[in-house]
Amino acid sequence: MKNYVLLLVALVFLMIAPKASAQDKSTTGLLDKAMALFEKGDHAGTAQALTEGTAAIETEAKSSNGALKDKLLSKVGSLKSMIPLVSAGKLQSGILGKAINAVKMLIGSNRISGLLGKGESGLLGNAASLTSSLGLIKAGSSILGSDQQTSLNKLLGEASKTSGEVDKKGVAGKVAATAASKQLGSIVKLVSSAL
Image (tube, rainbow, N blue to C red; front, side, top):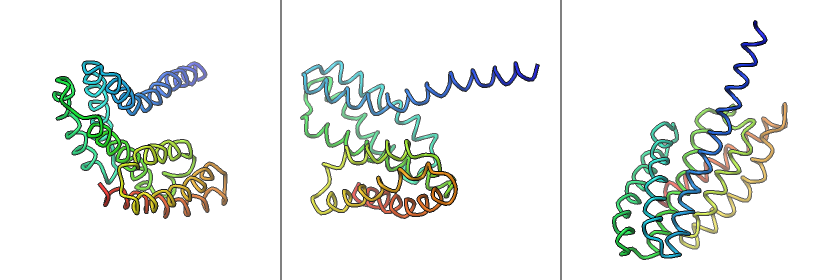
């Protein structure tokens, strides 16, 4: 009987885990889709993708414990307010692109902040999550001024190297988590002050 319970728990976990991963990808994927549709002139499709994407991001942000939660919700609110303009075809591509990039940077930074809030244990074993979050920040960084972008790119390069090491076992992982923590904290601060 015990084996059946363990098997059931494992099956439920396997069903839930891919869904969470897919949801994570679809959140920012919907923003990318919105931008691609906008560039093709599909205003209705853009509005739909933005509506779904902003709803997913709001849900994620409200349930997060990241330090940038309020900034993220504010930027998502700004993005939502653009949806009627998108539908009417009255919004310029540069404005929408800048808003989407700001949201991407804040999603990545907020996720990192949430992991940092858990201390060393939040980083250990989370190299893939950190890499994904750093990628979001990098993807949106074109909206920053050149000095801020240069500083951020340097930090992102350093953090990418050490973040990949947090999956190591034992002392090596702990050393990497300590180093990554400082770099990631600097990235979160820079994004927070820039946006």
